[in-house]
Amino acid sequence: MTTAKDWNVLVPEKNRLVTPNKNERKSSAGLPTHIVIHVTGTNNLSSVTKTFLDDHSVSAHYLVTKEGVLYQFAPDGYRAWHAGIDSGARSLYNQGAQHWMKYLKFFKWYKGYPKDAVYVDVDLNPVWDETEAAFVRRADGQIWSEYDYFVNRWPGENQPVNFAQDPDPNNYSIGIETLGFGAKSADPAVYTDAMYQSLAQLVSDLSKKYEIPMEKGRVVGHEDVNPIGRFGWDPAPGFDWSTVRKS
Image (tube, rainbow, N blue to C red; front, side, top):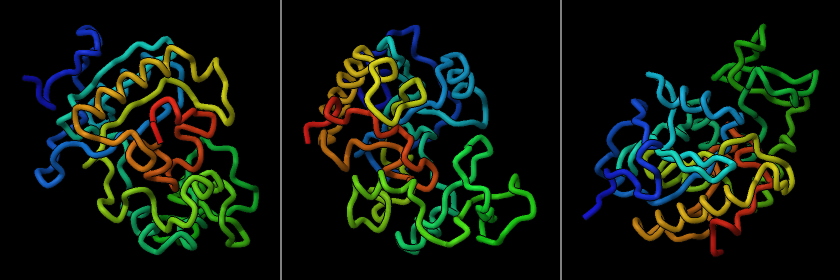
């Protein structure tokens, strides 16, 4: 009898790579209840693999390449470190959408912040040097349009998916990375048929094993559970959710 701590038979043995970046699921969490789909933000498989295998880094349970090849880095019964939410973002979420949607996480590589943007620390105080920033707000204090994708998908929601039940998605979910940058619209070169086929097979397998409904709210994107940290691009609007969900 297979258990949640066994390797998935869908993954070739040579592609079962043991990440050190995992720990035991809390007993209160039990078996996983959600599936979180990501984009890696790179097409470089060796770079992603190195990141997941380095000590004191991040991880995911699975990775799917554009060719549809599956990799596994942690059995499902372990808590992989793929979708953690830092304390600053948690504090913002607890204050409601009209507050947290005024802030984006600061990424030094992101080019979308306007010239007059205000860079702030974790306590929301302006910083002298943007490299010291935790978050970014607009100069006029209004809500960022980057959250339109979240609002359209979750109209009326005040917090991220499942945040009220558990503010740490790592506790309750299985993380699946798709190799690539994602895209704003459907692009067969980004979202290949082979990738979708393997992803659909994997999600269906996990759904049956752990009785996770293949529906909106249970099979979600990283930006659904942490929009401040992944505002509209993980896995991005071009992703076809009908391939991994029935509703």
